[in-house]
Length: 238
Image: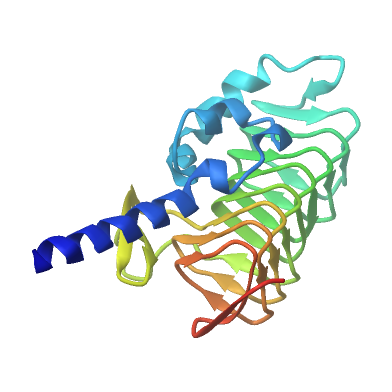
């Protein structure tokens, strides 16, 4: 009976973590052109291997009155502002009223949402940026999904490959979810604020409306509506 009780508690915690990491608890899907893709999976990282194919399929269906095709599998909204020094490799979709600034480097497999900002010397690869996301200053965002109005401060980056090159596991204390992915940066919920020069390590999941202090080294699951000061001090936001 004792072991059965421990197993029940462990299973409950595992279910709770899985719930915190589900798309429905991280994102408002009405704020992304990738809604159909994300509705087809349970956890956001499950969409990462499907981004390229989805962009090509969706791009060919976009309204030509709103989007124009520039190069191979690159669709840019006519209302978007793309600086002449920015580099965009396909497949990619740049949304309406988005801004891709000086020397931005979009390596491909990228969806940049409506009103989003990709800033000076920011690099993107295999990502979904929801509407009004801001990655405005010297950011690297790879193999990641950033929710509505998520913001990464200057110099903050996603680290998308483990130093030992092993598959990424999402961890919360002793609980974990195996992803089967070698490359996995960060899943940021809606309205997440990441402080300047922070590093989001492989497998990081940050819940909605959470703030990450500057110069933080973040790993694992961070609850929604919280303030991350360091790994030993995560407080509820009031």
